[in-house]
Image (cartoon, rainbow, N blue to C red; front, top):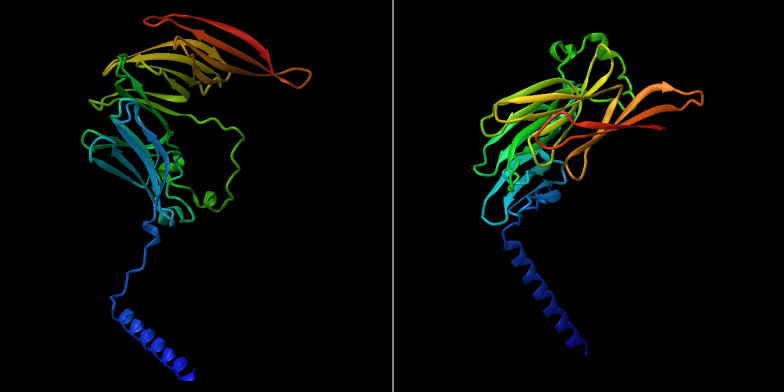
Length: 305
């Protein structure tokens, strides 16, 4: 009985040593780089389903925007891109660029000007356009059944004296100020014709804008620095021309929203008056206009808040 057990044990040890020797003779397998493991975030798809885009991120925090055709073997990459968007006609893909990780870890940025770099990619050939210090952007569409994206609209942050000269030594040592509650962004509105790269108009001191969903029109709020008041304007534009009409003068205009029938726009006008009960008085107004002409009529509704 003991001889059988010893024989089996010897055979097992022999097989184990042979297996280990074979494993040692195998070439070393490369370690898997976890940075190559990517997850997709914020996917978007064109109206016809022909193009898709999404953020692809690694465990190390780096990421790109990948753009690919669902019908052909065509793929583009926007390095360090995030928050992709696709125009309805699938012609343009936009993405905002993240700063490199080494730059984002520095104690003080070289430029404190608000906004990010916007990259616009043409899916026809992969060519790109870039725009700096962008706060927000949108496309305007020509009035046809294909909803052809004809213009890019974007709000760019204003350049300050500190951006030109850099922060002074005193400012650099002072603790950062807390941002004001619900601080309104002001910038310069740019309207760019995409085919010709022609800048149709630039309008300063714009607080907010709303692009018409189907036509080359935009409503925007213009702020008067001297009086502190706002005015609402609606503008139409083409490849080279621009026409604007003042619609409404108010105190603090915000919340621009086109109606579902696309023939009216609503907004909120907030006054600074305070009643005896301590509540602020808010005036809201809806402006209604018909396609193809100005002026229109608006209805003003006073609502306590």
